[in-house]
View 1 (cartoon, rainbow, N blue to C red):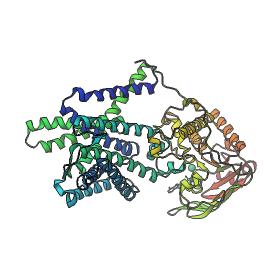
View 2: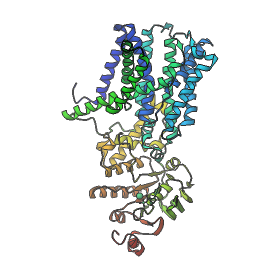
View 3: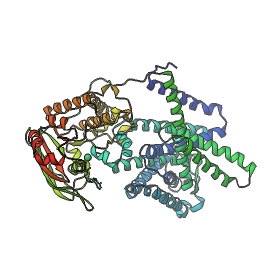
View 4: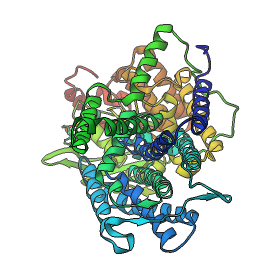
Length: 603
Ligand code: ADP
Ligand code: MG
């Protein structure tokens, strides 16, 4: 293959190759291989949900088999005891799985740290236990005589026929997930690992994003459960217990949590290995069952030691080294597409009108008063600087006025709203965009995607629309806007590079582009020039002045006094949490109290 082939076309070629091979398998393979591949397809479907939930979203679930079970039992019960069609069974199964996931998610997804994985074990255990103790579900014997599927009068009772249905579903689920990751909700999902504050700063609700992701992953498991029930024509509790959940997680980890293909590779690896062990171990010992568990534990530990990224992670690493050695050129660096209508802009407030008013702001951290009764105003079209020695409380002040931290006392008015106590994301949606002193970017997302995340609150597409690719018109608008903001900060030609590859100073500038993509009324920048070279600082100064001309209001914390003095219209000086002085740069520079605070050295 030509090294200069477009990476997208290269991937398409791969996918087409895999599809052709999969389509031919039942023609040439024996029935054992076909059933194994059916199991792999079903496993891959569950693992795909886990790649999204755990790999991309960062929430570990040890209870995914329970969702497979809910769907399998739902369709089994409906089609056997109620005599309904398996297609009604599919709707019922997905409905029940989705609602259970919603309920469980609402109860557990707010739990932080280790509590979430622990709680998934708890409901994983309890749901499996439920199956074994309900009379209507056949208790431990389960439900049998589940009808085979029929498609247009054609029976799928034969595993070879079922094979095609399973793999079409797996293919569609992969496509859905692929589309999803490259969309507005997908970027929010990929942003989850950056923390709730990052998402809230672009107007997104991390809890809701995680909940919708959790339900999506559960629905994938639900689809798998429905297929399972009508393939095996029999359900009993044990395939849906916590051991099975762990096996699904092992598939996702072994294949590689970082990539969708990891789900397929992992499911194949685990199930082929399991089959192999089931053949070999009985020859060695009579306790084959226990030894199988030990072998899997060993596999897990080896993986975590040597290949955290799973098989796909290894392959990717090799490919990167290979392309580096050959100096293969990369794909296009800009997002160039036919121009589309720009996203709607806010009407900015009239120049000179009040944008922000902080009144008696107080923040206590235990005994420490980090912000002590600070008041100031910012008017539309101004650049106001907030300065003061290290530890003066500037960043804390920014966190208060963006509602990133709750205030201990005081009021903040932004435009026509009293915002103290409002959720940070709601304030962001009103047009208050910020950057962080400690950069909050997603290093493994491209520059373009990081900036596009900023436009979250200006756009609407959800998971279903994105997965079905019905969001393309809006997506083009978002990407065009992101490219425009990248051009503005001078990084337009590096749109497809990873944000983590930028030097720290440049990452701060990238955060400004993300904030600008939100079309802000007020831009709040915490030390944007730190780590920049002289020329870059000058370019930043020019950009901020240009934004002021366009009517954007800017509040900035900066340590480089030369930079600040030349830029701002007004300064607020803080020291030990209190406001020391407020005024135009020349007056502040001449103020003795300010000079004393800085020991006369900097100002
Ligand atoms: P600046 O940005 O002006 O350098 P900060 O606002 O970061 O100052 O910090 C002001 C004071 O508040 C410092 O003494 C700092 O240690 C303290 N502080 C900041 N954040 C926290 C926190 N989350 N918990 C406890 N103390 C904090
Ligand atoms: Mg600070």
